[in-house]
Amino acid sequence: MTARIERLVTAGQFTLDGGTWDVENNVWIVGDDHEVIVIDAAHDADAIAAAVGDRRLTAIVCTHAHNDHIDAAPALADATGAVIWLHPDDLPLWKRTHPDRDPDAHLLDGQVIEGAGVDLTVLHTPGHAPGAVCLYDPGLGVVFTGDTLFQGGPGATGRSYSHFPTIIDSIRDRLLTLPPETKVLTGHGDSTTVGAEAPHLQEWIARGR
Image 1 (tube, rainbow, N blue to C red):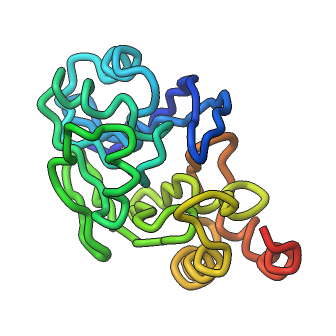
Image 2 (cartoon, one colour):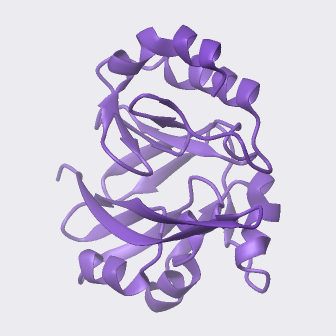
């Protein structure tokens, strides 16, 4: 059975460096009629659980540990028994939101998360956050980029734990090398493709953000 991709948009707040912003996040649910994986459990565990329905949730994969991408992860994991995955370089950020609960497993570059009819290859893409990852499934022709790459450019790098030259390296070396028809499914907003974004790399470097 071919896996399908569902998008759920949840709303909440992003908080870092003393500021708070209202945000809407994409929660990606990937799988089939029996089993799914959630990418970024944002804001509303009940809404995500309702979207999962009676399917088995095997994994909650965090693209990075900014609070708006992980705030609902422990509650969703407790309700479903799913394993929370996070790259260890983002543990300091994770601890700001969940000081008393660790992720269950550590993501490693090149690792493949299998299940629910998908094979998600972990691409470590630091810059927006030290432990930011993207998840590439060549069979589905998609890459889930979290806040690393959006329609129109890189994710923000103006706050703590972020670094613009690093995110440029990550995008150039890990994402723009993927097939141009690869769909880019982002952490916020509309999707795009690798081919649509690749010609603009020099513009992003020139504008410096």
